[in-house]
Image (cartoon, rainbow, N blue to C red; front, side, top):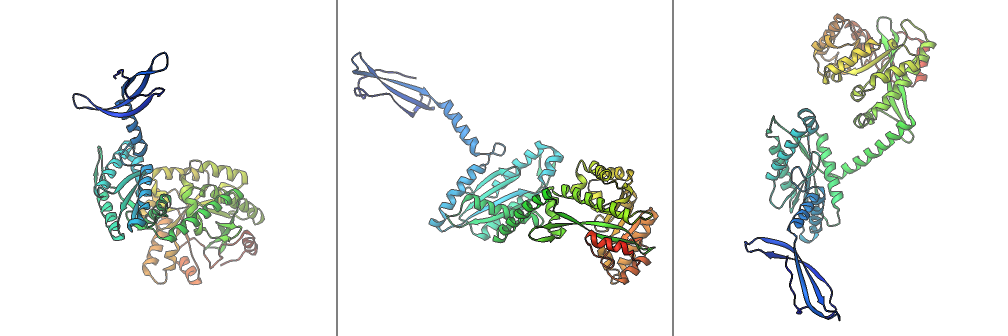
Length: 500
């Protein structure tokens, strides 16, 4: 920018010096400049002057500041990102001991955001996130930090805040987010689940505090969403147990640690066993037999139910083949296997079933797949099409737990099914509630009108057996006949061929 010559200010032998400074132009504009001062020497090496060069750094400085801003801010919402949030949280925690004040951290997750994104498109989803960021900012003080942690997750840092104050802010956030959002093409409402935790010591790390808030958020999700939950130490213990269970479950899938127990189904007209239902158990190397309710929900959530279901189906059909050859009947023994929602939605579900029936040599007419009423109705025509495809192969379809889902008898005429299984809750209430008796009778009558057979679940007493017979049910299962048992025990029962 400028150079000049002078002998003042640079001693003999002195080298080049550089620094950055600010210059003001005649118009008053501030410029960032790089100032370089170099000695000028004669042939003998004596410094005879200096050369000063100034270079305008404003553009590169601006770019540098822009890059620094982008590194610690979310490009969509302009909020601090997780890097900047963690840094501010570390700083706030370092002051807790000195000022004897706690910090509150929120971990916020939007409920059902994926559905909005998938249904209305990513552009609308981005608009929603920008509007959520704006509404969150409106709920906070200037000194609070609101950050986009990633995806549909946001975090909030409240310094010097008591528990009741933090809860008030959480309630304000929930209320603000629930108000309809006017986007470019749609007006929608959104709810959020908030996890709250408190940092009380400089010894705590930002990572541990955020992890506690995240666990509390999952607690809010589990309580039904659209609310907040404060972290409790038991949440961490539960999370650690869940992680261990998930790791064990993955190992169990690799090692095929799952065994199948069977519960008989009795044809009420003859009193004989006409089929069995396959029920999975986990033979854990340390815990022994683990019941389904202790691992099926987790397997359904993380997708491991798909390989588990295939193992169960294969083992069940292999066993069915053995029993059909050992105890031939007309019709042959029916094997009933449950399909969960995750299994039913798997794109290769039909092909997997075809291959297993072919490999085991079991006639598809001897396989009964049981699915719940809610699974069939939740996804509409696509699920009905899959059911029709299975039935065209000869596989039978049973609607499990009928009456506990959509409970619409009008749906029956649309369902490509062979059996209805009346939920055990209705059977339990037959004696105490006349309404249950009327309901079971109505379901049975309508099912028969549509060519469906009716199975009564949970028959545990001779009185219940008499009632379901009287009401016209075709089959029954329950502890009155036999509890779920290993194949060896059922084999002995089939050999005995009892009549009820």
